[in-house]
Each structure stands twice: as C-alpha cells, then as structure tokens.
Image 1 (cartoon, one colour):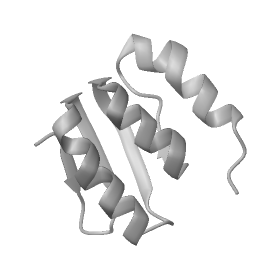
Image 2 (tube, helix red, strand yellow):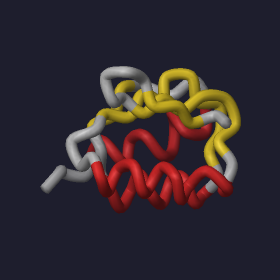
Image 3 (cartoon, one colour):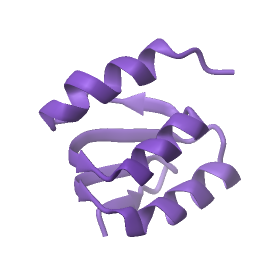
Image 4 (cartoon, one colour):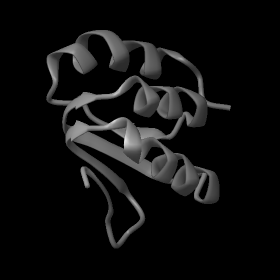
Length: 83
C-alpha cells in the first residue's frame, strides 16, 4: 500500500499510488473531512487518486516529489479555493 494513515490522522501518499487505493482514500477523506494529505513522497498518482483529491479538497502538505504532479496537478489544486 502506498497510502498510509499516520497516528495523527494525516494521510500519507508515497511512491506510485495506484487506482486500487482511490476508494480507501475517498472513504477516509469522507469520514475525516479535515484530514491533511501529505504527498511530499508521492512520485506518481493514478488519475483516480487525483480525482479524489480534486473532489475532496483536503489540506495538502507538499509539493509532491513527482515532477508531473508538481508541475501540473499541484498548481491546480492549490489555486482552487476550499469550501
């Protein structure tokens, strides 16, 4: 698993996050809407993971290590206001 929940409730995304983990990420973020996602060690993420982040709008600790995520996804996520 590349998605871990730390003892303080922070969601940690590491390495290559596959589509199979999107449902667990979504479930956690729905149950914990104030959760922070730490993706500083995330190299790549399947579009399903990115869609969950776009829909849930969690607080992000970043930038991610992956250049595509850093260049294309992070700017969009941080530019969108949280509700």
